[in-house]
Length: 365
Image 1: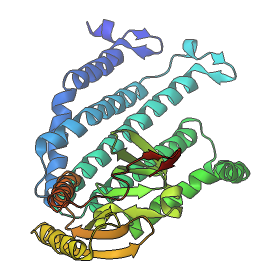
Image 2: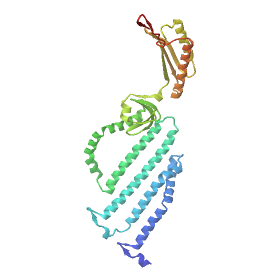
Image 3: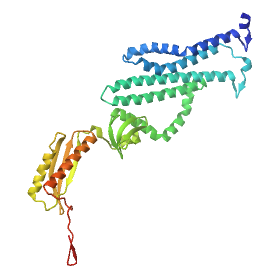
Image 4: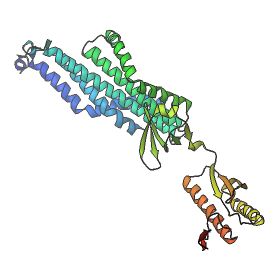
């Protein structure tokens, strides 16, 4: 048996192949158990920082990429203990198969490590979002989403640089220097994207609006659902999903309807000129009584002007910042009550009643 295990095959003993294969097989079979155990150890460290951490959420998000990273790492270390067979070390497009396999293994290891970091960022963002949900200010949620995307983009860029430097042995310093002119050209070509990125920082720190606010910008009115690095997503009152570049959100005149202190309703009445002054005065007093209700905080009723065709009666009232449904219902009730009042007082609106008579070949109104 020992003679068989000591047999040389492709520059390595059979014993070496068996040991390496058993190590990889054991890690493959016990990957989930090992990854959950290591995730539990990391969880204990994390729990000292955040006491209200959910262990299941942490395990679900981190265990899988951690297990994959460990499998790749152990596989590469184990295979590295073997001598690469000279018979297989052939040249392919100026690169040997040994170099190609080594580069591929390094790239897979870096990708698995970056994946683990990205999932860790997702978990930290999940914790911060839960804490942000406990505060009434939605700007905390906004910052969490923004910086999660920002750090994930940064780690992805670092991963690419690691692949180029470690995997392909490129000089990052020379690469950055060589790409400086290209970067400047790209910056000019993507000027709008850079402006939107800068505008996103302005939105985050100046806070003209936050997630959940009802805003009106240009011809778009809706609720802010997400603020990204390039654009802001708005759910309109038509339930459509509009994407507005952040630069427009900053440069345009933006009306944050959520921050309003009151809602305003206006009614314009035009009683006919035949309406007596005392009836008109009584109408104003009765309308004031209609507007005297708990939902209305301020109200004004007055004769605004007299035209050749009618009296112009101006009615304004303000409510608290109630929902649009409540506001519309109140506005409808007030309008109907005013119409019923005018019917009771037999007050006609200008142009509501026009008689046409034909006399002596002439049309008279």
